Length: 128
Image (tube, rainbow, N blue to C red):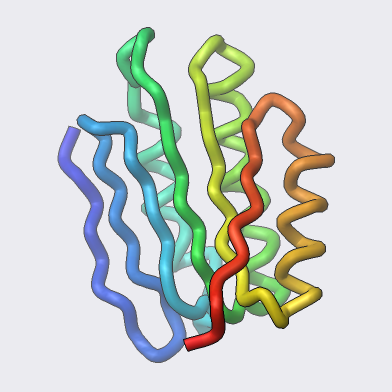
């Protein structure tokens, strides 16, 4: 399966989905005018991917800001990772947040509660 690499813009995150290695990352900000249109190709690619049974999947999410419509799409993305975990894949979700951003930290904590089949790791970062 072809990797999915999208450069960041002012309102959309950098995307790097490496299907062969099982490494997935979103980095930057997410407040596109149409979140569904931006995230749909990511969700479609992940839905059609058939991972190796023994592989480990790692998702690294480092979003400085995301709006409410992005939140809905992120939940859809995390749900797909959770479904892979329910099928026996080891899925690690690393949620990176600014150590001074309580809202982002709480969102990461909520992910751990909502997606119990994922190994969710909260990773505080220094503000840059």
